Length: 239
Image 1 (cartoon, rainbow, N blue to C red):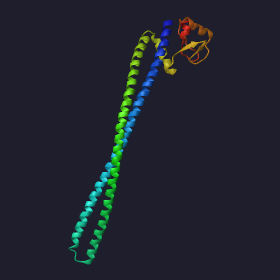
Image 2: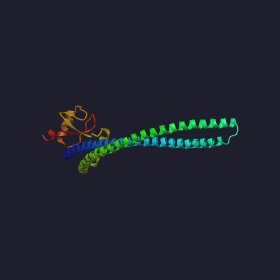
Image 3: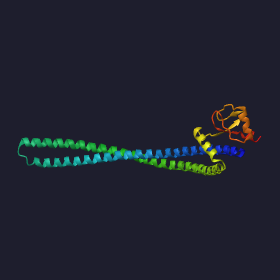
Image 4: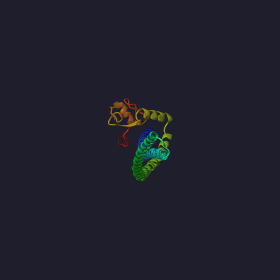
C-alpha cells in the first residue's frame, strides 16, 4: 500500500501539471484566435469599404445614364424649335429645354461629387490594404512563435500522459475510480499532503490517531473534513 500511496501522490502531481499545460495550451490557442480575429476584422472593414465604393459606382453610372437621357432630350427639343409655328408652343419647348439644361447641370455636379467620393474611398481602401498586408505579416510571425510554444507544450503533454498511464496501470481500479471522482468534486485535487497533524488541502487539523496511521502506510486514509486522499509530505515520509 505504501507504494500505491506514493504512486497516488505522483499521479496527482502529474495531473496537476497536465492541467496547467492544458490551460497554457488553451490560452495560446485563444491568443492565436485573437490574432486571426484582428485580421478578419481588418478584412471585414475593407470589404465594407469596397461595398461602399461599388454603391458609389452604381450611383454614378445611374447619374451618367440620366445625364445622357436629358442631353438627348435637349438635342431633340432644340431640333423641334426649328419646326415650331406658334409662339405658345415655342415658349413651352424653350421652357422644357431650360429645365432640362438645369437638370443636366445638377447631374454633372452630382457625378463630379460621386467621382471625388469614390477617389477618396479608393485611397482609403488602398491604405487599409497596405495596413492589412503589414498586419498579416506581423501576425503570421506571432502565430508562428505561439505555434512553436504549443508544439513544445504538446511534446511535454505526450510524455506526461505516457507516465500517467504507467502509474494508472499499477494502481487498483477501485482506487483510480475514487481518485477520478474526487478530482471532479474537488477542482482537480484528489490527493493532498498531511503535515504537522493537518490536511494541507483544507487546512483542518486531523485526529491524532488518524494522522499517526499515515506513518504506517498500510492503508488509504482520507481527510474527514474534505474527503481527499492523504499522503505524508515527502520530507516526513522519507525522514
